[in-house]
Amino acid sequence: GSYGSYWSSSLDSDGPYRSGRLIFNSGDFTTDYNYRYEGQSVRAVYQVEPTAMDIGYEPYNCDFENAEENANWILNNGRQTNKWHIGSAVNNGGEKSLYLSDDGGENYSYNNRATSYIYAYRRINITVADKYQFDFDRRVRGEGNYDLLRAFLVPDSLSQNLTAGADNGMNSNNNTAPAGWIDISNVGIMSEQMGWKHNSSKLFINEPGLYYLTFFWKNDGSDGDNPPAAVDNVKVRKL
View 1 (cartoon, rainbow, N blue to C red):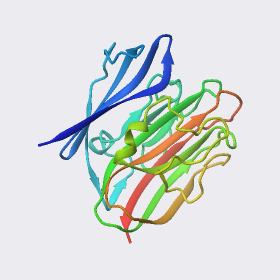
View 2: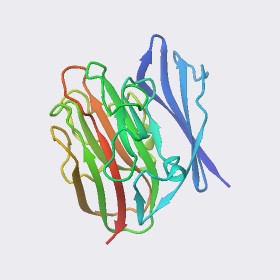
View 3: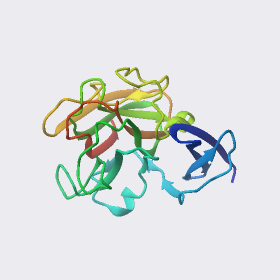
View 4: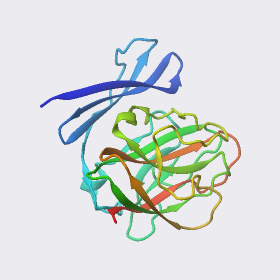
């Protein structure tokens, strides 16, 4: 079959190096590589093993208890100090969830002095233009407009921007959603809360096709309170 590819640089730098992604789309799966490169060259310094993502179809349900399904989530953490993990440090039912950690997933916590922009996403297929309901449970304290969680549906054509270290214009206290990204949270920014909360939104999706169900975390490197973001019980269904 035919395939297309694109490469995107990241704002995550380490001396002369920058990180990026090389994504090959072919049929019903995506292969996602993370790279470091030097200067303007695309020569790989090292390569993380690729992960093939099966496409999720509506109705979609994920409670992060199934290892096979969890493997379809891409945690684009790059070299950021605070990283997305799927593990058992926190949950809202069952044993596992998607959450931030600054120690390899052992604890549900973040380093508020280390600026981070990271993405966790699942590729899903919206088959028809229609009204859809998006549900998920979330827990996040952080800091107001600076350390927070966002939830988006990102069209496949814009997914090259889902790169660790890239703020996509949402740096500092700027929180305007990038053009074409669909906010599925019903509240916009999510921060400054205690305990688990349930999010539910109903949106008309005008363009059927492939999308990335995306959870974005940012923190600005100063102040902010634990705990950071955690997500559980993600659902998408057509009404």
